[in-house]
Length: 205
Image 1 (tube, one colour):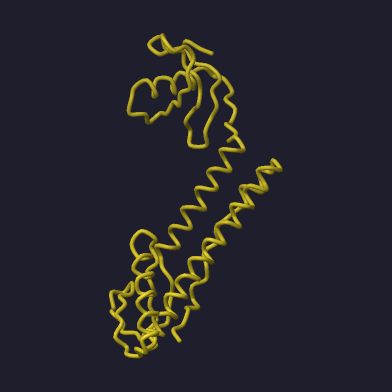
Image 2 (cartoon, helix red, strand yellow):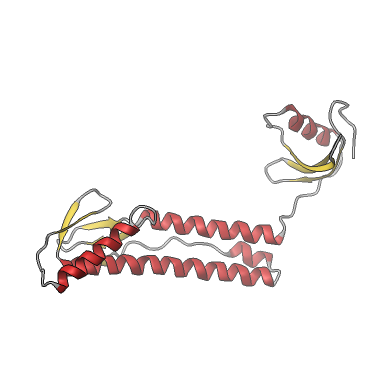
């Protein structure tokens, strides 16, 4: 603990982050000792001053070790972000005319549209409609004309695509939970969302 800079509050128990900032506690006049992160690039002078004071103290500052639960939660958030990115990227698909395109599968924008097309296609097929009169706009902004049977195949493929991604995210999050329960930091850190090989596209039938 130090009073190196008289204009700054007292500080104690600093821990060093890899980015050069310090976690510590500072003495607040009303609240007592409170958590604080000091940075040399802080927009507020207090953060810069405390950072300088800690450096000037000459103390050997230990590295901060991320708590296991915090690490696990961060890894889960990374998996969720990767899942969302994969759904936003869409599903490679070979359309009935042989064109290779991407079917958009964004949950907030495309899922309801695909569901509506699937319901309409099944109704049309039940009525005996075989015309290629159902329109679908792919990621390239090309509009393709499909028969009800072709649209059913496409929407079924999109549903299976999402289910595969969800299953992948569940498997990875289960691995994180297992490693967390075992206290295995390295196993948690090793969990990664590996990008899928999208060179093989689903094909319309």
